[in-house]
Amino acid sequence: MIMAIYAGNVFSENVNMYEVYQQPFFPARNCFPGYKLLTADNARALQNWLVNRMGVWEITALADGWTISGSGHKGQIKVDNTVPIQAWCTPVTPSLKPMIPNLPPVFYPESSDAIFEWFLVNKESFFKPLSLLAHYFGYGWASGNYVDKVGQGMIISRSTKPGEYLIKGYNEGTCDGYRCKDRLSIEVDNFNYLIDSGKFNVGSITASEKKRIASKSVFITNNSDTQQTSTVALSYIVLSNWSKTDSYAYGQKVTSKNKFKWPFVGETELAIEVSANQNWASLKGGAILKL
Image (tube, rainbow, N blue to C red):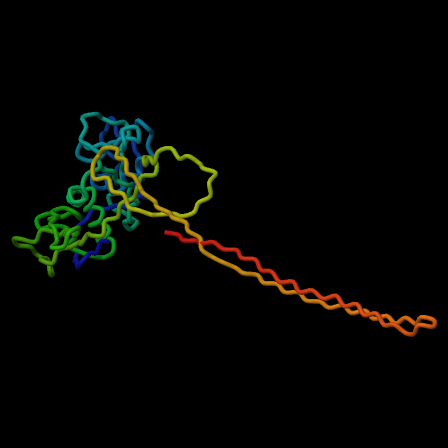
């Protein structure tokens, strides 16, 4: 999280990217009349935009002996004795308002969080764009005393809370202007770290036909710069315990009566009765326990 606190006005040579043009630099070593060379600070703010419009190995002139190179040299901005053929130029009197630049990502080697954060907030390539952004949002005095460009003369200090830093314009000594002592302050905290998916290696994964019965999530931290192996233990116990009883009862009774008349004997009645009682039950059981 980044928060800017108060500001006033300060001179800045920020330019609009749509008023930056390539012009012949050699042999005159200057821009056309009415134009001036882009400064190294301007080029840093527009670096990604400029490099995308240059040849891979092209070197283009800037003001005061500085140059900017193409993507083959990673867009490096430096003082160079080479005399380029082309130069980046912008009108002496701009007709368009400055624009917020689209800056490329900055990559740094791995280290501990505290060392990395302190190294980062002290880099000019980090706090200058933030100062420029605050300037575009209307904050003033976005620099220290005795300098006249945005992002210069900034003092970096640690906050009382871990992981919080303060970037503030130097305000000691004398200055002229309304509230010139109230220099731009930027509070920086809440750093977020993401895994580079292109370099993160989880090793080989073996597919299994077994059915998943449980899962477990753990956090693993590698505090070194070497490859580490970690083991995750998962315990799972199954115990079943259940029962069911089915009871059945069946009863029936069948009666049959027949009368017979016998000549000279008389009448006879025959009764037949069949009865049955059937009872049975079935029991099933088991148990289930998951840990």
